[in-house]
Length: 229
Image 1 (cartoon, rainbow, N blue to C red):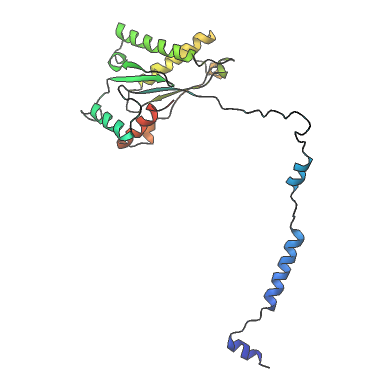
Image 2: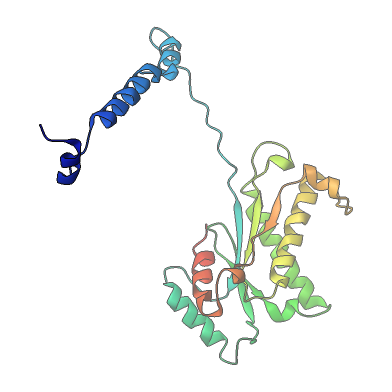
């Protein structure tokens, strides 16, 4: 019989201790593992719809947002982001700070109205009043079509999406129009008390997308707003 020193010299290993450890581990897992889960037991005790009318599943759907979209006039749907970028560059031929003179305002999938930015930049007079009245009339008419049963808080929220390359006057005058509509519907004038908004429809501004897009990617932003429903 070969000695242990000869086995070591030939590179042989004693596998008996390893097999013993494997058998102990296997025995441990067999004794501690549950082969039938508690979930199966619970399921077997639940009632079924056999022999009785099946209960109708109730679905809680999130409120549908009403999007007010404001973007440069003349930009129609159906183009790629690069084409919107080219249109924007043409409007800004005088440089990045060139003021875009006109904008389109649209609610949902309705036809847009054109807003003259030059008139909104005036500090007073008949022209700015006429322009603001037109915006109010359009928003009043469109929001009327989205009315649902319930109080003002239950109405679908309004989100104002204004292209980041436009003046925020467009967004602010739209916000004022929505609040004026809500004041007419509720019969309450807003006094500036924050508690009043707890019972009012939710009206928000979409986050400025300029944080997400560089100056060369504004076509992506325009594509998103133009095709928004």
